[in-house]
Structure formats: structure tokens, C-alpha cells
Amino acid sequence: MTSTFFQRILLIILLAGIFPTLRAQEYKYEIGGMAGMSTYMGDANKTSAFKGINPAFGGVFRYNANFRWAIKADLMWARVSGNTSGLDNAFPFEGPLSFSRNLIELGGQAEFNFFPYSDQFAYLNTKRLTPYILLGLGVTVAPGGNKTLASANIPIGVGLKYKIKNRINLGLEFSVHKLLGDGLEGVDELDDPYEIDSSIWKNKDWYNCLMFSVTWDFGPRNRPCNNVNSITGY
Image (cartoon, rainbow, N blue to C red):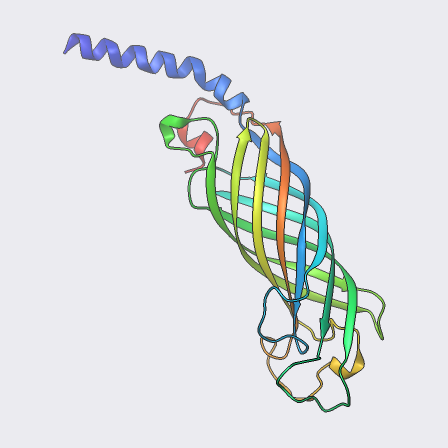
């Protein structure tokens, strides 16, 4: 019993000695860039999430509240396009229509990691790789066309994070962005073409983004005490 007691005391001392070092290696913030593709869904494309692929890129900032939760802000430019040619549904106008338009998004999302995310604290079962889900709110502005679109949007998505090495993170994320307004196409004929009153969830436009990101950690955590709960946030 005496041997076991002293072993436990030694373990506590060792942990107390390494906690400051581990804590200094854990960072609160990430900043970086992202690039990928964007697609449009709306009156000119009702079914295919990957029809009309266009480029998208932007910047991302993330606050890691703890190993499980993060708050992310992004500023993104994307292009969307569509064409009514070949669609089965009949439109109340003559001939096919097409459009191509740029948009800018400023958004914020809450992310939940399925595994505790870190390359440190292995004794807490942290993982360098984790899937996550996100939900948030953003503002989309699409200038040009027949009129400028300005609308709130609700992003919902899934992603994968991998800490390739200390302070460097790779990410892959797919998100759908539900606009709370119509008219993303910038063409009058496609702005509510059937003139049917509906809720904000129907007859509105969407755009989808598949983005690859690289971020860098900064902002070391400064903790007043060596407390496991203060480090993990559990």
C-alpha cells in the first residue's frame, strides 16, 4: 500500500510539472484561408447539389472554446451559375435562361467536434483527427444582375479537421447555405417565377460550398491553476 501511495504522489507531481508546458502548447485561436467550389440550387436547379461547379475562396477565423466546441467566422467570395435548359419543369416564360453571378458572404458558425480535438493531452483521449458538424447565421450580398441581392443565410454542414502538426490544421468542409430571400439568380424571370406565396423554407435559393482550409494556431492559453477541467472545458 505504501508503495502504491508514493507512486500516486509521484504521478501527481509529474503531472503538475508538465501541465504548464502542455497548457502553453494549447492555443485559443486559429486563422487561415480556404479554397474550393460552390454550386447553386434554386428555380434553375432543384435537384443536383453539384451541378454548375464554380470557384470559391475566403478567410477563416476560429475561437476554440475547448476540445469539443469552436466558434468560427468566415469571409468568403464565391461564384454561382445556372441554366434552365433541359429541365423537366415548365416555366412561365419563353426559351431557356442562364445566369452567372458573384456573391460575398460574412458568416459565423458554432462547431461541435465528435472527438476531443488536440495533438496534446493523449491521456484525455484527445484526437488529431475529428469529424464535426456546424450551424450558424450569415449575410450574403450578390451585386449586379437586375438588382443587388442582400439576404441572411443559414449555413448547415459537416466537416473533418486534422492537426497535421502542432499549430497547423487542415480542414475539409461541406455546407449548404439556405437564403432567407429569393433572387440569387439576378434575373427577373427567375425571381419567384410562379408567384406563389410560401414560407421562408420554400421557394428560396440555396448555395453549397465544398471547401479545403489551412489554419494556424495562435494565442496561448493562460490558466490561473493546473486544473484538468480548466484545460479541457468539460
